[in-house]
Image (cartoon, rainbow, N blue to C red):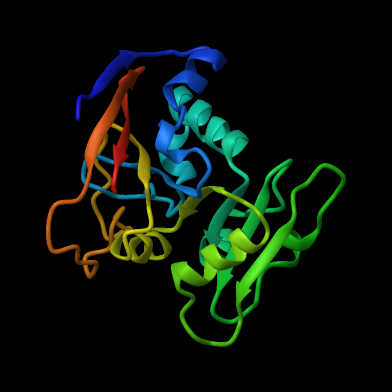
Length: 212
């Protein structure tokens, strides 16, 4: 598999071309992971938030917005919802994954133009990726973006259900014990992934990696 390379910044039409899905994605569900990480693999900054990493990253902001615009639905764990202060998303549906069924009231407070908010889980048991995809498919949503957090994302990769990972690598070190992009207890048995696109943008490296 060849790797396409380029340098940013990219205009919206160029960004749409850069993140266009391959022909085999047409007519079926396509799952993307969307993350930012440091050189030492941390998915949050010292403040414990992904916002501590993407502050000042024009490339990450542009890609993050584009992937949401592309998506039918964004999937996020309830812990990330609370930590990052998510609310309903303009024009895109949101799935909240939770064992307890408890989500902040702000995430339910939809206004005109917001997408649907769907809570999956609530019986005190782990929520499998298959459960989420069943709910997503039942609603006719096929463009899926998993935004986090890492503990939510890892089982999706382990189950072989993620088509590609779109990640921004910032050239910084976070240290500490913040969450890794893939938790240490996740096991794949082999190296997973092949880069299809590598974009440099103001010192950041944005990579599209096929996972299956």
